[in-house]
Image (cartoon, rainbow over all chains, first blue to last red; front, top):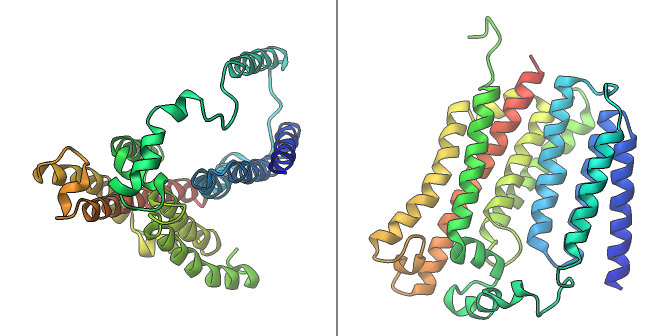
Length: 179
Length: 139
């Protein structure tokens, strides 16, 4: 049953991606990206990754859509006609995609309990976190306690991104006469 | 969008719900899906929605540019500071067992503080980025 849902969701993802490429009105493209993120969040839910789905729904659907709309407000909503032919970029993308798909052939099947990633530290986290951390959501236990260093690093990345945006775009200047 | 009565009324009703939900996600992350990152993003989304309807100036009445910069640094400092606190307590960096007599209580305290730091910085950065973009548009 869940396979049917996943296949339908992936089909809708593909349709949305093609629609986003075909459209030339950037406002509609941003809406397509937003729908794409919402579908991706649904795929994550179907894969039982609710924490990831939550993040995708909040960041992909909400914040990044608003930021892209704000960017459209700066650059105009219609796509400029590209100066180059699409042949070479299309070839590069197709080749890269084929290499990536070829790379997945070696990977273990989705949800395979014998996959290396499920044999390393994951059993320890899942079995011992109720005793060592004592909170019911193992994801939070891993992110905040076992992998505290990684989360600190991620927060530093977000901090740096914020500083970078401030440095590039600056604090909003007040209009002349206001100050 | 300020003149549209539907948008105005719906925004005023829905923004408090979004903010309360973000606090729920922040402090309930131990038990359900969610945590500091999601809570910070949802918190910022509430303010961004308000600013989309009532103008970017509305955000500045609550979070001035200086407040946002302080919050951005404060969350990260809180996270890193918790690590040093556990060093002082004689444990390894970011090992929360030292925060209470009972190691599990210490873990709870540590995770709570760390997630709070994540939430503060993420919310501040998201609002900062939005203000930086939208502030330019309106000029």
